[in-house]
Length: 400
Image (cartoon, rainbow, N blue to C red; front, side, top):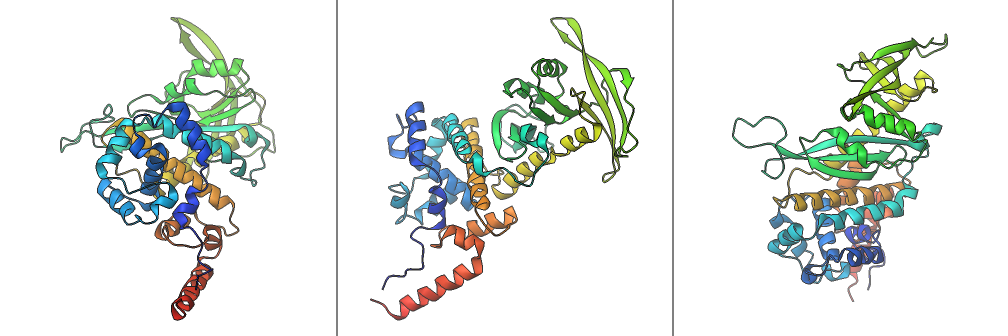
């Protein structure tokens, strides 16, 4: 007697079904990424690294053994056999990380329509992008050292991931990796923003020359001003009587930037804001001379969303243990963690139940090999599991 309640695929297979195999085939063809690795093709490599992210494997041995336990089911997800540790290691070293970058960006384009948060009503949000960076620490001599040498003699290096997100989507639309010691503002030249866009960033990205170019192209920014910034005050703007009392001062200023040893002035706006919650004075800088000061402050507050993204990634798909000691392998692991995060966000958007993201990932990780309908299970885990167990008991009572 066949158990009709158990779903035909385990949860991990259902997550993989969100990845269009024809999309993968196009990227493989374009990048010729299977040309020299036919025994461990790109799809097998992708599935292996996604299993690493979802299962929380922390070593090649753990990953290989975990897949070996799936041996009888692997053929259904396009893997003929569990790859050896040496095969995974070699693939991570030799298959270009650009392939996994292309896979992530293609999946992001496919699903970005389901990502926007409908609760965000401010008109500016539809044009707002947020930029920040996070350092992924490494105790390997892979990239240039970030910070002072440790007392135990080990060098603390790191990959710095520079990320841009759309404020309503909360997933990266642009990612670039540099060594941890590289200045943040070098990332700005890679941004291709449409006219009328708003960009929020921290003061580490300060680059007056770039600000001048954006101003000429009709692109606005909101940032914090460096404590040691030099400027000349032009005019103090009168604050309205019904203003937000956290706005302390609003003025236009000029700053200077240098191109080919020649100094140029740039007119900006400086807003002093008292953060009541954190009891802290914040100085905002923007090239938008029209928005009211309270709106500028509200725009900057959206910067916390990218910090929430970094927190989600690091808490749920930890990047503390890397399966390779080379930059390519590390970048592949990061891209696959981002793909895992994206797939879970897509699933979350389709649920009726309002999950805390970390709790949702934890329960999926625990039941990765369970044969239950993913969405039904996440909408009502207790009910789905009880019914599955009941059906299983009935099947055992009446064997064929």
